[in-house]
Structure formats: structure tokens, C-alpha cells
Image (tube, rainbow, N blue to C red; front, side, top):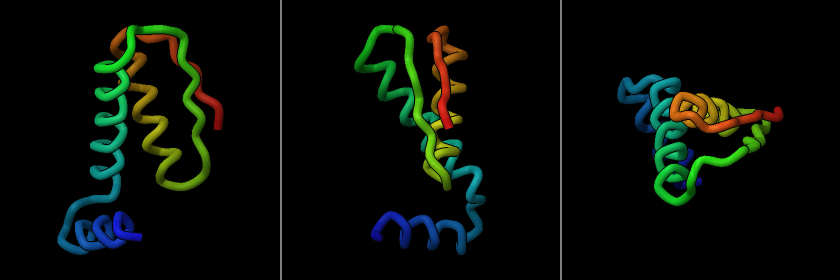
Length: 72
């Protein structure tokens, strides 16, 4: 609930929702790369904005040479 309020406030102040999703997906990919060596990876994406975060994270990982599959 706190994150939903924070996101709503940022969007109300002019930040685009897609920008928040892009930043979140990039942060997830960065965290994965910091913790693991490249390996075959499956990203599970549900409905809603978190699914979009997953798609963006998968794209970042693929750009870094990871073998990534996505299931939605």
C-alpha cells in the first residue's frame, strides 16, 4: 500500500508511469547481475505493472548476454 501511494504521488507530480516501470525493471536486472553469474533464466510475468517490470528486466538481462525466457 505504501508503494502504491508513493507511485501515485510520483505520477501526480509528473513522472510517467512507464518511466517508473523502466527504472524498476532496470534495477531488478542490475540486482540479478550483481548476485548471479549469467545462466538460463526464466522470468515469470503476471498481469499488471509488475509484469511490465519483469519484461523490462528480461530485456536488460538479454542485452547483457543472459539466456532469458519469459512466461506471461
